[in-house]
Length: 78
Image (cartoon, rainbow, N blue to C red; front, side):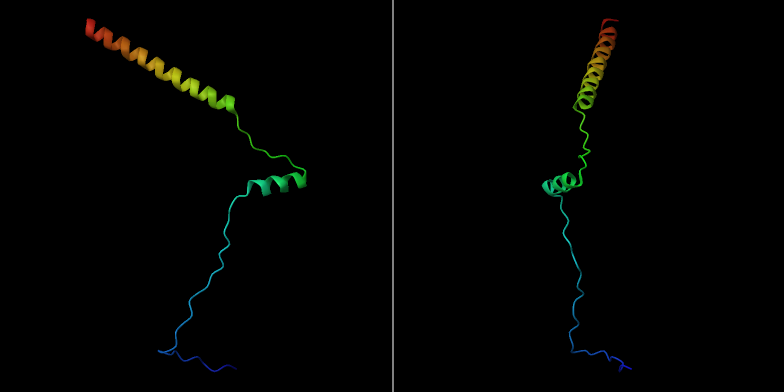
């Protein structure tokens, strides 16, 4: 049986420690591990999709400019 600990005013308490494991992404290591396992990387970057989105966005803006120009022209002439 242990003796009860008596709190002391003069004794400095030790700070709490923690275990910090820094995390980072190492692309080369990840690729190497995937190749060792025999699996291919499943990263899907579809450039055509982004091009279509950009084209659709610009077409929408051009369409809105034309419509607003026609409305402004109609209000100014009439």
